[in-house]
Image (cartoon, rainbow, N blue to C red; front, side, top):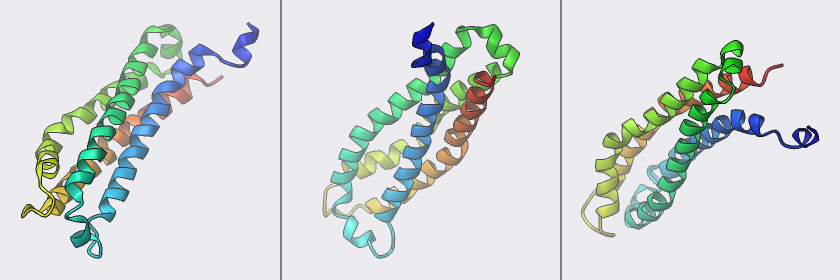
Length: 168
Protein backbone atom coordinates (compact mmCIF):
# COMPACT_ATOMS: atom_id res chain seq x y z
CA UNK A 1 0.00 0.00 0.00
CA UNK A 2 1.46 3.36 -1.07
CA UNK A 3 0.31 5.18 2.07
CA UNK A 4 2.65 3.02 4.18
CA UNK A 5 5.55 4.78 2.48
CA UNK A 6 4.64 7.90 4.42
CA UNK A 7 3.01 6.53 7.56
CA UNK A 8 2.87 2.96 8.74
CA UNK A 9 0.54 2.59 11.74
CA UNK A 10 2.30 -0.60 12.85
CA UNK A 11 5.68 1.15 12.94
CA UNK A 12 4.08 3.99 14.93
CA UNK A 13 2.61 1.49 17.39
CA UNK A 14 5.91 -0.36 17.73
CA UNK A 15 7.85 2.90 18.31
CA UNK A 16 5.36 4.74 20.57
CA UNK A 17 6.56 3.14 23.84
CA UNK A 18 10.14 4.17 23.08
CA UNK A 19 9.15 7.76 22.34
CA UNK A 20 7.15 8.07 25.56
CA UNK A 21 9.77 6.25 27.67
CA UNK A 22 12.35 8.69 26.30
CA UNK A 23 10.11 11.60 27.32
CA UNK A 24 9.72 10.15 30.82
CA UNK A 25 13.46 9.64 31.25
CA UNK A 26 14.36 13.10 29.92
CA UNK A 27 11.71 14.74 32.08
CA UNK A 28 13.05 12.95 35.18
CA UNK A 29 16.56 14.16 34.35
CA UNK A 30 15.32 17.71 33.74
CA UNK A 31 13.48 17.66 37.07
CA UNK A 32 16.60 16.53 38.86
CA UNK A 33 18.80 19.10 37.15
CA UNK A 34 16.56 22.16 37.29
CA UNK A 35 15.06 21.58 40.74
CA UNK A 36 18.51 20.71 42.03
CA UNK A 37 19.65 24.20 41.03
CA UNK A 38 17.25 25.59 43.64
CA UNK A 39 19.06 23.70 46.38
CA UNK A 40 22.63 24.60 45.54
CA UNK A 41 24.44 26.36 48.40
CA UNK A 42 24.49 29.68 46.51
CA UNK A 43 20.75 29.62 45.68
CA UNK A 44 19.23 27.65 48.56
CA UNK A 45 18.37 30.56 50.86
CA UNK A 46 16.95 32.58 47.96
CA UNK A 47 14.74 29.76 46.70
CA UNK A 48 13.26 28.91 50.09
CA UNK A 49 10.46 31.53 50.07
CA UNK A 50 9.61 30.81 46.41
CA UNK A 51 9.70 27.03 46.55
CA UNK A 52 6.17 26.27 47.86
CA UNK A 53 4.37 28.30 45.18
CA UNK A 54 6.80 27.21 42.47
CA UNK A 55 6.49 23.53 43.35
CA UNK A 56 2.68 23.71 43.49
CA UNK A 57 2.58 24.98 39.90
CA UNK A 58 5.38 22.70 38.76
CA UNK A 59 3.81 19.61 40.28
CA UNK A 60 0.24 20.33 39.19
CA UNK A 61 1.25 20.49 35.52
CA UNK A 62 4.14 18.05 35.65
CA UNK A 63 2.19 15.16 37.12
CA UNK A 64 -0.22 15.25 34.16
CA UNK A 65 2.67 14.95 31.70
CA UNK A 66 4.36 12.16 33.65
CA UNK A 67 1.17 10.11 34.03
CA UNK A 68 0.37 10.59 30.32
CA UNK A 69 3.83 9.39 29.26
CA UNK A 70 3.68 6.43 31.64
CA UNK A 71 0.27 5.51 30.22
CA UNK A 72 1.53 5.68 26.62
CA UNK A 73 4.56 3.54 27.47
CA UNK A 74 2.63 0.99 29.51
CA UNK A 75 -0.46 0.67 27.35
CA UNK A 76 1.45 1.12 24.09
CA UNK A 77 3.64 -1.80 25.12
CA UNK A 78 0.58 -3.86 26.05
CA UNK A 79 -1.09 -3.02 22.72
CA UNK A 80 2.01 -4.22 20.91
CA UNK A 81 1.66 -7.58 22.63
CA UNK A 82 -1.69 -8.10 20.91
CA UNK A 83 -0.87 -6.85 17.41
CA UNK A 84 0.88 -9.49 15.30
CA UNK A 85 2.14 -11.36 18.36
CA UNK A 86 3.85 -14.12 16.33
CA UNK A 87 6.08 -11.50 14.70
CA UNK A 88 7.17 -10.16 18.11
CA UNK A 89 7.90 -13.67 19.34
CA UNK A 90 9.87 -14.54 16.20
CA UNK A 91 11.97 -11.38 16.49
CA UNK A 92 12.54 -11.80 20.24
CA UNK A 93 10.87 -8.53 21.21
CA UNK A 94 7.77 -9.86 22.99
CA UNK A 95 9.48 -10.12 26.40
CA UNK A 96 11.05 -6.70 25.98
CA UNK A 97 7.63 -5.09 25.47
CA UNK A 98 6.44 -6.91 28.61
CA UNK A 99 9.45 -5.54 30.49
CA UNK A 100 8.80 -2.03 29.16
CA UNK A 101 5.19 -2.15 30.37
CA UNK A 102 6.06 -3.55 33.80
CA UNK A 103 9.01 -1.21 34.40
CA UNK A 104 7.13 1.85 33.20
CA UNK A 105 4.19 1.18 35.50
CA UNK A 106 6.70 0.49 38.31
CA UNK A 107 7.42 4.21 38.30
CA UNK A 108 4.23 4.55 40.34
CA UNK A 109 5.63 2.32 43.10
CA UNK A 110 7.72 5.32 44.13
CA UNK A 111 4.67 7.49 44.89
CA UNK A 112 4.65 6.57 48.60
CA UNK A 113 8.30 7.61 48.77
CA UNK A 114 7.71 11.08 47.33
CA UNK A 115 4.19 11.86 48.55
CA UNK A 116 5.19 13.07 52.05
CA UNK A 117 7.81 15.51 50.75
CA UNK A 118 5.45 16.76 48.02
CA UNK A 119 2.73 17.34 50.61
CA UNK A 120 5.12 19.25 52.89
CA UNK A 121 6.51 21.40 50.07
CA UNK A 122 3.15 22.23 48.47
CA UNK A 123 1.47 22.81 51.84
CA UNK A 124 4.12 25.17 53.17
CA UNK A 125 3.55 28.89 53.40
CA UNK A 126 5.98 31.31 51.81
CA UNK A 127 8.26 32.65 54.51
CA UNK A 128 7.18 29.96 56.96
CA UNK A 129 9.45 28.06 59.30
CA UNK A 130 9.38 24.79 57.31
CA UNK A 131 12.64 23.71 55.71
CA UNK A 132 11.19 23.13 52.27
CA UNK A 133 14.68 22.84 50.79
CA UNK A 134 15.29 19.76 52.95
CA UNK A 135 11.99 18.36 51.67
CA UNK A 136 13.11 19.08 48.12
CA UNK A 137 16.40 17.29 48.83
CA UNK A 138 14.37 14.28 49.96
CA UNK A 139 12.22 14.41 46.82
CA UNK A 140 15.29 14.78 44.59
CA UNK A 141 16.87 11.72 46.21
CA UNK A 142 13.86 9.52 45.48
CA UNK A 143 13.53 11.01 41.99
CA UNK A 144 17.17 10.17 41.24
CA UNK A 145 16.79 6.56 42.39
CA UNK A 146 13.56 6.19 40.39
CA UNK A 147 15.15 7.74 37.30
CA UNK A 148 18.24 5.50 37.45
CA UNK A 149 16.27 2.32 38.12
CA UNK A 150 12.78 1.91 36.66
CA UNK A 151 12.78 4.87 34.24
CA UNK A 152 16.16 3.99 32.74
CA UNK A 153 15.37 0.27 32.70
CA UNK A 154 12.00 0.91 31.00
CA UNK A 155 13.77 3.01 28.38
CA UNK A 156 16.38 0.27 27.75
CA UNK A 157 13.63 -2.35 27.46
CA UNK A 158 11.79 -0.18 24.94
CA UNK A 159 14.98 0.46 22.93
CA UNK A 160 15.57 -3.28 22.65
CA UNK A 161 11.88 -4.03 21.95
CA UNK A 162 11.65 -1.46 19.16
CA UNK A 163 15.04 -2.37 17.74
CA UNK A 164 14.17 -6.06 17.56
CA UNK A 165 10.60 -5.58 16.33
CA UNK A 166 11.55 -3.19 13.53
CA UNK A 167 14.72 -4.99 12.39
CA UNK A 168 14.66 -6.33 8.85
